[in-house]
Length: 431
Image 1 (cartoon, one colour):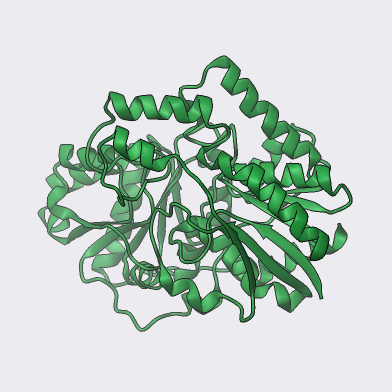
Image 2 (cartoon, rainbow, N blue to C red):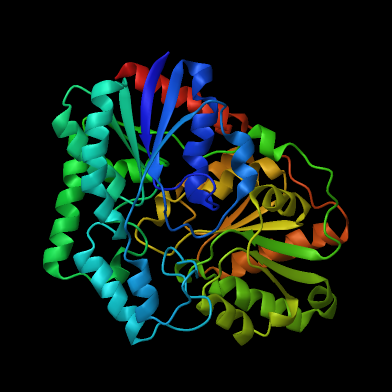
């Protein structure tokens, strides 16, 4: 059986979306003739812990770990955070607006910690893995980012072992990620970010990304080879559970909700309908599961919807799946950012597999809109299209009242994690 070394920052017992893609690939790679070997930090900063993923770990899996130093304790002292308080990703601020200390920290992170705060793990990892691979050869290596420091480990290993095929997996873009402009970069730091990104893209034997839109962006940087392998759902996770639908007209968002995804139009329309229809107000429940930015909660209060809000800080993956399947309507929010057309989040595919209707807010000509149309799973409305948003919500509500709020989702099997792992194995074989 061929071997592949997978270099990933996020790994079990981390919770959140970042761990799932490669944990699921690892789960099924042996079925396609590849033995995975994992390299991950010994003491990383995880945003949350989810031990329910333990069931996905293959028996006898080789997991290599080395210590990592990250500057987060310095950041905690600077911003008066508690010693063990988790650091939120994507600039999520749950309790207050950013003060000058947070803003200064972001400036330092963007301009000195290039490409990200995990940069201090690059050099020791290259040294460790170069020696390890001499005694334990593999047939390919894969790096997955963000954090994009993982790709710089791959870049250096490629220099040391030129004939070893290297796949760079971009779960999110680098310089086109939604929060890139929030890093407050100087022209020099911006130039360094772009230069490193281009080196990775052009040196890797193949790039992998998760959507056609992002593929088209990377093609402009002239990679040797590039392939879309989307995120997906694991059939063993999303088999229809024995759950009952919520009694209320629940509109649920599962996952991190940052400022760039704050659906002001949705809150405004819900407020209008609540004002016009007392029954709707009594029936409505807004469910937000996961980390939620302070600005989102402010908007909900501004539109007098806090009485309809059920906020749940975190659920294990299995419980989040159950929450999806019990919701009347699932809310999918695309970032209002330059790369919006190519955004296909990991939870999108679990939404599809949940067989519940999806109300999506984003580009009506983007990748998510295309998949929704192909599968018949829901409706995409534009970011600021109040008329379409109101019509969609009222139609879903009418179906809810008639007890006919269902959806006939089709053609989703191609997004199963096992099927997608087959695509990955085919790519590795080609290299």
